[in-house]
Image (cartoon, rainbow, N blue to C red; front, side, top):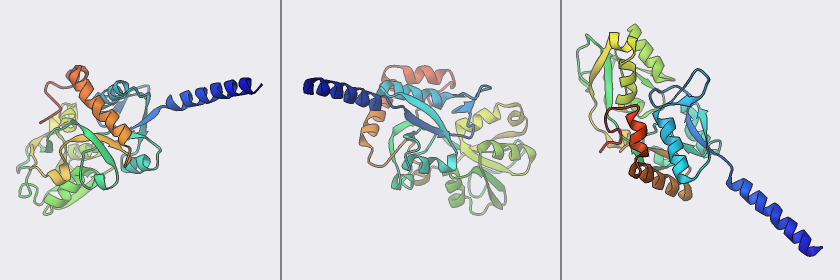
Length: 257
């Protein structure tokens, strides 16, 4: 009886441990569309370069990941409170964020640009933005950048999504917007963006604010996940998966220097 009980208990424990190991990893993405990185299709399924890359990282790391949309301005609290397990949402690695969360190695890095009306003068500099209304998405490195560098702007308008800033630029309610060059490239290729706007220029580097690139956001001290993600980033770069996904979206190397 004892032997049978132990065998049954061992089986139960084994099944429990197997179940725990198989629990899905909640891959947090921003709930606001951010093409070509992430956006919902007609059925509500999230697609885009970053969604594909995130799932490829999970596969390489042997993790069963579930795409979990979270409002951008609450995505770090969602991670620290364990509502999600990782952030794969174009989050730049910065010293300020590293006070609260950890990051993997970078998985992409692209320039930051300012876009304005086609007939606009000026440059992507403090002097060029003087007296202009500049729109940015809330709680992003771009908001921090314009508040630091474009202090002579007539006004800094903050939006919940980059799409809202783009719409106000089309409507003439703001003079310029700053964001990642790839996100704004998608806007400039849209009918509205192509008709109204142009790249004013690339902003000057500020490593403290813009950081060295985008990484996977991780809970502080989660060294096991950090090691898995770093190995997965190196792995999909080495085996061609990263380039295969990227070539369906971009005609250049998104990884950056």
